[in-house]
Length: 300
Image 1 (cartoon, one colour):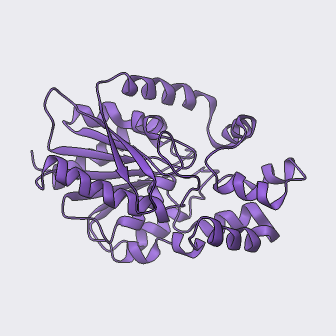
Image 2 (image 1 turned 90 degrees about the horizontal axis):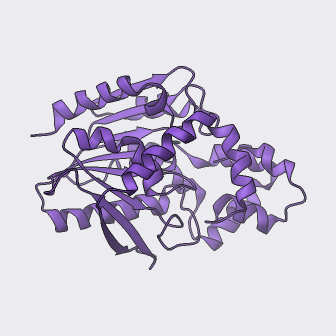
């Protein structure tokens, strides 16, 4: 979900190159560097990367799962202590990211509250297989499958918090009408309610052609990225988090999502905050919102 200015800044990209740029696992590092300057402030990267490295240094377990599409997915389990906790924070990363980069943001918080952390590499990301992003379509079905795996591995008495960022935020919203009872609440941070408006703003007149290509290549319709119906039928409490200066996923996605949700809910919308930076800019407020949900919905 990056901005159209880049597509126009590097002509003449062929249609196939544009498609790969938007949907494929890999793209030139120089393009990522250019996009990152627009997405986050420099000091955020230092803060994030320190926490990612700290998480990766911890003892953890690696699990594999085959997706419904036949891809081998990798998931990483970080216990908060010597014994497994029955409380699990399931962290879902975003677009062109991977498990530790995102879970690192919250590992100190969740471990200090007695939660183990489970963080998969989504399809086409990190160490998982797959060539194409699903913009929440693939990721939501994969995460539901991971939930079944966790329930089988650790028991039906586990208590899970689903916590997604960016595309991961859209993913957990997409799941919100289908999560099993082990999921006690959902946190969505900077997620989109529908990928189509964002992609239209990037692609302009090329959108229809690229969308049709995606239907044939990746095998899904971009209309299926719309999470509004799922949200309208959500079955568990939800916390909505978004920065008001988000240059990647427009802020207006957040109040729309909040209004659609029929369950117990709360929000944290912060001034001057860019994409998925709320824990960085307003960590105490974020922790307070999470603490309130944990006190209400998690049994110790």
